[in-house]
Length: 250
Image (cartoon, rainbow, N blue to C red; front, side, top):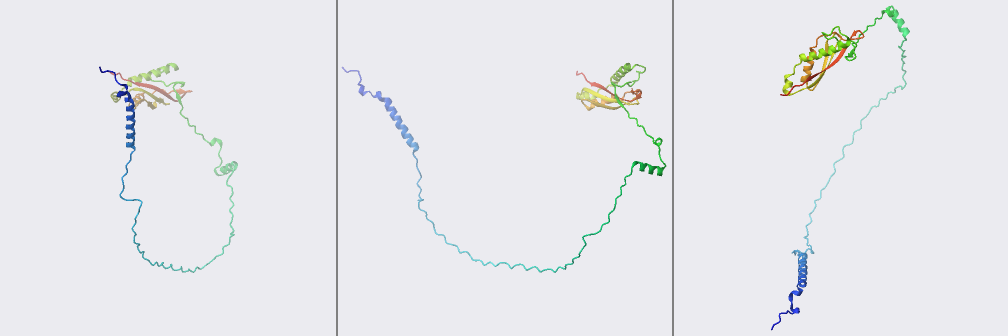
């Protein structure tokens, strides 16, 4: 009978890993040598030997150079010298400047001698009265609006303010252009009630010129009043009033 047991010395797969490692190293070595191998193109010309052909020398023509003749010498010009001797010292007459200043007494005596004299009583002094402007809040006697006559100072002040508000409401007219453009806001108007009781110097400041012009128009329609007084004299009175332009959106 044949034995099924294998001979360990004849087993091929026992050293297969060793053989694989050796073969892999050989392949890597040959691959590296193939990559490092370089080839060069052989030239047909031997660069170690240089041959040059003799070039014939060209003859350089000889040119005779003759320099230009020098310019003619300048002819000397005869100069007639005529020297005059002038004296350095010349007498100059000095002009004496007299002072034209005079004192006050001499001027007064000369004026009296020419005109006949003038006294203090002959001098007229013109007195120019300057218009004083007083704010409405501190004026002693406020301007009297028509219909507010015969009231006390506090009542006349309240009556003036009420009448101005009624005047604004009565003459108020919202500009159509401002409505179409959607312009609204507050316009502050400042004006002066002069010494004759007339509203002047109207100024305004608001969100748009259209509203400012309308506010100035309303104040310009104020009636003539009795002017405000400070220490019993008519004076200019400054007053400010706000006018509101506002519309309701539908």
